[in-house]
Length: 458
Figure (tube, rainbow, N blue to C red):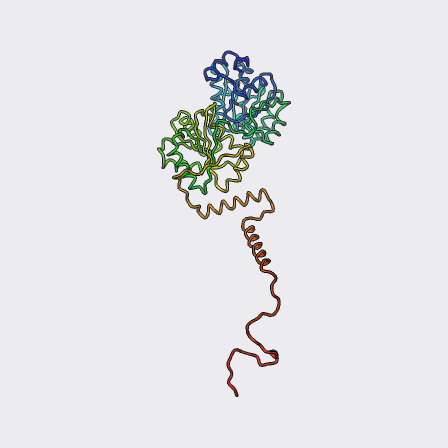
């Protein structure tokens, strides 16, 4: 199939050719005709499969040319990184048209964004919070809106945007086309689709939460945090195939600590870190340097997992196993994009094994395990970290079995069980009088009391 078969206008076809796209991806083949036909669409596709173009191309065809002042299409994204990525895709696909668009997200002042919107736009890309802020100021009119797109709906729900989305649905026209795209189809997404879409056409490029086949997955078992850090250092110094890697951590503090550790071991100019505590300009500059290939390692939290679209990412390294299991698919989807091959490496402590097992159920496969490379030093686990992992494992077991009382009670019960078994094996106890080895004679009760002292004869 070719893009010409979608009957796109020449301006869009020229932009597609400039990008080097020759054959539509599976999600594009299934989505574009349905969107252009005016249906509400529920699209399920893993990251890196051309999902953004699957809704932008028909959206640009429907909007067609610049008209009026108020937006006729609204695309909502959960993070500013993803909003910026959608804006970049818009810039590439709409470059031969006169269509006007704006992007609105938090972290920077709204003044410039408001000026662009007031000047007149056809398409608005926004995060829910910033969009509502601008709307409540009276600077955004939504009465002309014909199409609403929710991108990465599962992440939007995980981040607690549902109240804001419901407020947005109350202020936009009821008669509109709705498009909902997600990498996973969890129960919460299904409920949202029932609330949000009218008689939707469901298109699914791959089974929900399936990793890209172009990504090789590897799992290393490590005892503790220090060993994780030194395994990361070893890989960076010895694996020459790691030329552009994203290292994902669970928290901002771990991201910052990992960045500082690597900066002491590798040339500092090869490493950047992005997380919520970093300023917007710092994050943008770090992303641009990474995209241009000037940075070898980008350390990031999951806030950036869905907004990174770099086709040449060779490796994704999960320094921490994600607690939102669908995020595993989004993380490793940063590599192996656009038919390129990639590798996803995960570090797992014994406390994280529970989460890996849950992830394996979601992706319907077992992640291959490999022994630690020779030369990686294995450090003893500090007492505090050992105790923290033990508590976490107790909590996991309690989650599965509410009657579970904890490892201490379990050890006590085992000890008691062993003692009972030993006593049973020894047979019944002798309840008769104890044999002390001393003869007390037949008239012990009537004789003189023995005090243990010697008496002289009188």
